[in-house]
Structure formats: structure tokens, C-alpha cells
Image (cartoon, rainbow, N blue to C red; front, side, top):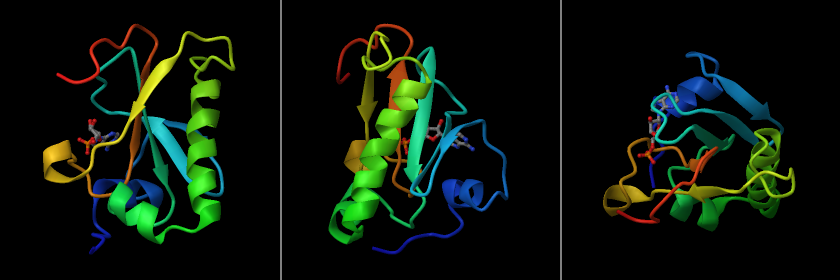
Length: 122
Ligand code: AMP
């Protein structure tokens, strides 16, 4: 799977274009989606170069995999929407490839919250 180093999230990771940062650690960067679909819409991306979840699940190290999952939890907590943070919950999803509706070829988890997210798939 070829990774395109010029995709928009790669540029955000290199600091070449700005983002509204929410959280960052060794493994992930999280920022607000530029076109929010819900009251709160965040994106969590791994710092490594992975095209999608297939690529990540087959090539990422165990540390990176744990780091990404922990990062998603940390972001939900920081946003105040996780049940751990006494929030009301949220939805996290990842689109993979053409049928999944993936537009940006760098793995990203969406986090939706701040209101009832609604039907799971439309
Ligand atoms: P997907 O369809 O799963 O690939 O989602 C890509 C998401 O990236 C969409 O929700 C876009 O609104 C979002 N997006 C695209 N460019 C940017 C950007 N520069 N900053 C933040 N979010 C972006």
C-alpha cells in the first residue's frame, strides 16, 4: 500500500498547514474536523505513515496500536464527552477505502459527540 506523503493530514503532521489542535502525544495528533458533522467532531490520527486501518493493523507496532487506542480515549476525555469524564458518550468510526467513503489517505478515527449522534449508518 503506497502512502502519499502529500496528503493533507501528512501536511498537518509536518506543520505545513494549520489545524485546531486538541491533543498530541508520542503516537497521535488530534484536531477538529474542518467540516463538522456534529456539535463536536474531532479527528485522531497516528503519527506514523499509514494509509488506512488495513495498513495500520498489518504494519503498525504494538506500541503504536496501543498508543492510537489510548489516544482516542484521551481525546474523548479531554473533550469532556467520554463516560470516564462523566460525559454522555460519543461515537468513533473509521472509514476505509472507496466503499467505506475514505477521502483522506492517512488513517483517521472520527469522534462525534456533544449531542445525540443518531442512526449508526445512513
Ligand atoms: P474521511 O471521509 O473519513 O476520509 O474523512 C476525512 C475528513 O477530513 C472529513 O470529515 C473532512 O472534513 C476532514 N478534513 C479534510 N481536510 C481537513 C483539514 N485540513 N483539517 C481538518 N479536517 C479536514
